[in-house]
Image (cartoon, rainbow, N blue to C red):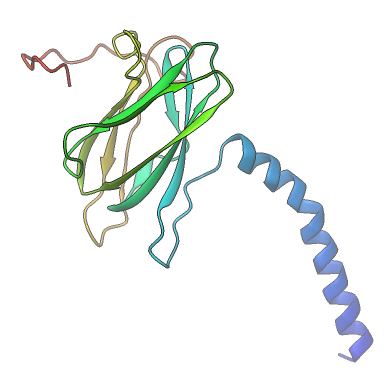
Length: 168
């Protein structure tokens, strides 16, 4: 190839990539997938909240640092809480107004986590999900988040009954 051919090919590739950018950018602003960083930074996961569902943007989790971005797409104030083996007690944020977002930073270990909206009775109305974090060194296990309640894409299934007084 001569210099002109290389420049033309590079320019065409650059323009083609630029044409695809708006489509990718629109997707990123509406439902960004989790993004892992090789430098050890936190993985960002968007959790869309509506009356009465929680929908994480990814279903695969590996042990590590995460920033859950709770995006309130509903008409009521919501929050986000998580508990499980990598978290001491419960980590939560609340008071997320409609159209607003809030960040919840946690470090997850392998195991099962409960995620819910801690506002009023939202959890009992179906605003909850379960996440499974895969083992160390593994590829991560599907989380099978199963949002329940109205507006859920997954069919609602009855929650197993337990004698756990904490309700988790």
